[in-house]
Amino acid sequence: MGTEGISHRKLHVNGINMHVAEKGDGPVVLFVHGFPELWYSWRHQIVSLAARGYHAVAPDLRGYGDSDAPHTASAYTILHLVGDLVALIHALGQDQVFVVGHDWGAAVAWWLCMLRPDKVKALVNLSVPFSPRNPHCRTLDSLKAIFGDDHYMCRFQEHEAIEAEFAQIGTTLLIKKFLTYRKPEPIVVPKEKGFDGCLETPIALPTWLSEEDINYFAGKFEKSGFTGGLNYYRCLDLNWELTAPWTGAQIKVPAKFIVGDLDLTYHSPGVQDYIHKGGLKKMVPFLQDVVVMEGVGHFINQERPHDISDHVYEFIKKF
Amino acid sequence: MEEINHRTVAVNGINMHVAEKGEGPVVLLIHGFPELWYSWRHQIVALAAHGYHAVAPDLRGFGDTDAPPAVTSYTMFHVVGDLVALIEALGRDQVFVVGHDWGALVAWSLCMFRPDKVRALVNLSVVFRPRNPTGKPVEILRAAYGDDYYVCRFQEPGRTEAEFGRVGTSLIIKKFLTYHDPGPVIVPKEKGFADAPNKENALPSWLSEEDLNYFAGKFEKSGFTGGLNYYRALDLNWELMASWTGVQIKVPVKFIVGDQDLAYHFPGVQDYICKGGFKRDVPLLEDMVVMEGVGHFINQERPQEISNIILEFIKKF
Image (cartoon, rainbow over all chains, first blue to last red; front, side, top):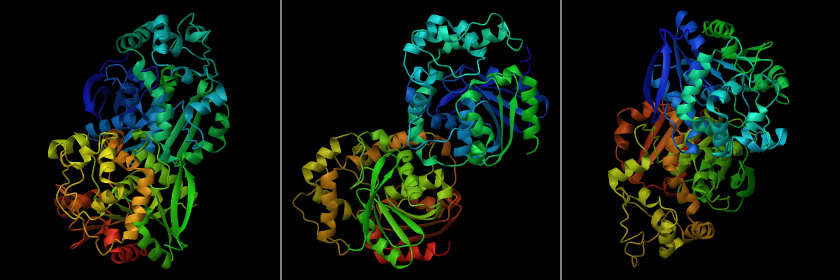
């Protein structure tokens, strides 16, 4: 299975109990997962980086897996999430760490670098580029203007209704649908079709995802539910309000960005120009490298684990 | 107060009233509670006369600036967001900052969030308070001083406003501005904020009837809810500022406080100042001044000295 030698413990950070998986000795590499995922998404990178002389640390973020999930939806702002990681870095006895983020984890990692650049030696971010705040338009309004009201992030705002819809689909099937999503287009979910109708059921699992992997994710989400993870989306407009001081601010950490060319995030209007024609570099002046992986979808760290481990190692060894 | 210019600037979703004078590098002056831009009237004129562009806003919730209704709209993130947008609207990359009372707290937060925006800081009265990760500030104050400690009394929406209303705006302002007791402000519910209602405090030499009427007129119009909401957002700020636990202030700082200031007598403050804590957390703290016989409203009580100290400090940058 490849998760031998990975140890697990709980640390008290920023008022919550956080479950972390870790392996290895050496400089800390902090792996930050996305939605709907867990520490487990990093199982290959944890083993690979540990073997190369690093201390890999992959938490379940607040609201996920074996970490605490506070009940209040407003306890999932980017300030709470970054606060958890700052406290985790402190609990690990470190001044500075390497950070690798994917999906929501990439967004949290960008903001960790924005708010506490002194804590991050270098960053490798996957899938989600940094999105500068538009002072004239709230986040959900911007999404609606581009994609309409049925964009999945807008649909996720419906407290309880989405959880009910997910429960109807069933956790295992839902995880399968999400993790195998491969269409190079944003997820728009009209109410008539629902998430069941819009996310295809795979005929067979891809080579990089086993039944055992699916069952691990499904088992944890069956236990915790999806509300914790959904609350991140429910704080999008609150985040917009609270990040006003960083309008126009740059991220001053050495960074590498990697995305698959089938990733839905690579197909938002304007994003490719933003990534390749200087927009991202303007916001992240120490962006050293951008890699687009051909024929690769959203769950890049699971789909091309060795490539991603290599990219991470090749970058962080420079520091 | 002729020759001070007034305008409204749209910043961070609100309309902000600013008073300004002069040309040159911007000095952003940030008032406290229960005050206004007007608290800086002397410094505005002095700074302008020495080649600076003095800018003193009414903060959100005060005076002629918008006052959003919700308590949750008064976090440090909102208020600093306003000031970052103001700095941008002024067309500057960096400004000098001078803060007093709540304005000093806002200035500390501005330095933590956007040190790139602050060339140097002169802070008055309120030292930097590193975040204590183990407990929320209002809960800690309540445990230390009880429910009648003024910060605790201020928490309940509407209640303090009603009590202030019973005393009357002008008298409340007078009581605040003439407060000279270095001890903690305990306000027993039976007495309310109107102790010795028949005793008329004489105005100090640095505060005229005209000054008092200016403050009272503006607070009569706006009410106190906006200003009180800063206190009501204290615990929320604590929760949202987890990321800055253990952070240092990395901006050159000068700090000034009066030895009669209640803020100088908050528990632990003098140890924090004298035993190295302040310098540890603010490594670029260049200088500290303790002014003998001076109270809390130091920029109004010793206006020329404060203006001179500011000028002497900022000219170095």
